[in-house]
Image (cartoon, rainbow, N blue to C red; front, side, top):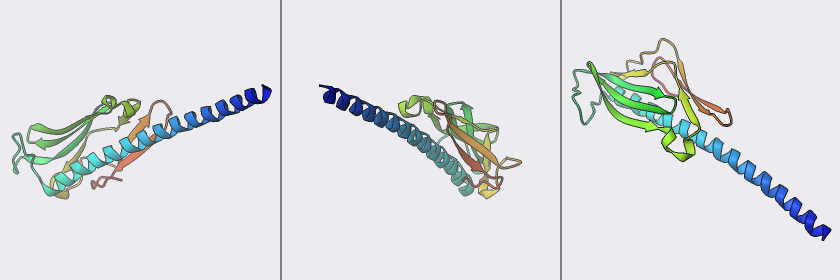
Length: 152
């Protein structure tokens, strides 16, 4: 009877460690995945601006397109939009809180980033870091945007 009890305690401890390890792994993967998706959307804005590509819909024309913005609208939402004269055409809005895997992930950057048309750089005065944070674990992932417009 004692052997059975000891076996159950050992199995419970091993199972508990496994579950805790899996949860930590899942959080790290969610943070890494969110950071990669955000970097991908930054590169989308960069590539569209470099090509001078006007959006398929809206009032943008080649003459009034000044670039593409990447804006963090709140701690869990960002947009990619075309800057056209005095207005903007939103191409993509992402809300991280809408996805159960990324509900604890927040994003922050000091200012909106404008990728200027035809590879003329950005509106940044110095390189800027977009920080992606898992609020539960405190882990962070940084995406660096240079003045010239490269995303790393």
